[in-house]
Length: 582
Image 1 (cartoon, rainbow, N blue to C red):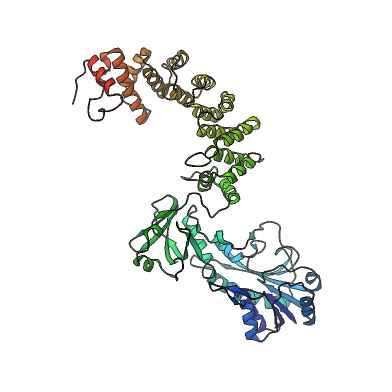
Image 2: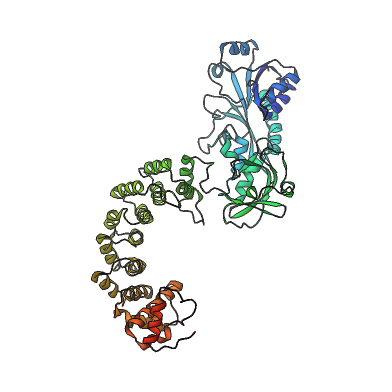
């Protein structure tokens, strides 16, 4: 059968080789124009152009496949079919109507339509791939399929080994399709995924991912493109081979470190050992060889930029939605948005608050509350967006995140919105309000905390009582009464906060409850409860001189010299006649 062949890549050159040896040898090969290549930017031909010349096949390299002179040249070749394999440009009318066009596509269609099917399959962790022979249509790799065969992707495979198998498989399938003319079957609508072209950000290793996933990127880009790792000076370290490296010293990922002659990238949940690298401006070499040359420690031991500068804000927003709700130590994409905290992030979060997806609105609220880590860049603007969202939001999860976000922005931001939520039916929302109002001294904030100190949920009562007793800068009869009302609370942690708050205000109503709490040999509140009760004992002993507090007073030692409670402790020891233990 007379054919015309369209292709560009190494893969396409291998298929051309087999086609030329068959009864369907092309009378014309069409490939892309010569382009500058490499660091020297010398003009070079495509692999298909070079192979066509070696095979002695007529060749054309048009800028525009559909130019009239190119179409005329294809017609002059009188093909019964066109064969396309990795040509690198869209084939359109009138070619689609004038000829049967067979496409050799290295994936199991409909999975991985598009420009980089082998790389994307490997990056995704697919267990197998294959080749499909399809009829080209106007859609992107969406035409009907006549033949398809599979091959496994093994643990040690890289792009080079997989593509070699697929070259042989694809060549055989193409010859079968031309010889046997099997029927075509439309692709199913389910399972469609697109293999987008590999761009610069796809090459950059992302330590926020599991090490197995990062290692797959290295193999998927070897030996033709190469993965890379961003260095602190703005250059890149090429990475050509890597292996799972066991335990990580940075469980959340993001650290590069060297140990003796071994180089590691700590990823999320595990380490990746970098085995073969390429220093900026240098050649490929074993990492051990590079380390023996004693490179600058600044490029062998460092933490990566938490802003993840290789990712666009839109991509961070998409990935942050995946982060949301995952039970991991670190949510890297949420964190990166917070660390960036620039106008683009603020605008993106404002838009996200209008999403119909509650998860996305939660992401927006979270980032707005921490926009500009470690210092807030737009606190007033962020608070205004959150307050606007609070007026219309009905989802309890979003409201809880919103409350905490306003709390992170601090006093002076969103108090009115928080107070409006103090009686919300959802306990997570009320809990967020209690946390957010802590440390605020506006009348409405204090009144809301007084109300929350009576909440039916003991954890909310505990926090509200702590906020009134230890964090509120005021001392009013209303606050004291609210604290006194919690002295008989049936939860110990609430009683601890009540006696501590009253003792800070010199109110001896805390005495009996404090003695009862101090006498308990086991406490539920941990280190904070122990500290709060010790401070309570010192203050109440100095205030009342009650000898029952003497056994609970600490010794006057170096821990208390220069402490703000040094004089209080001296007075307490004197008034209760407790021995001064040096």
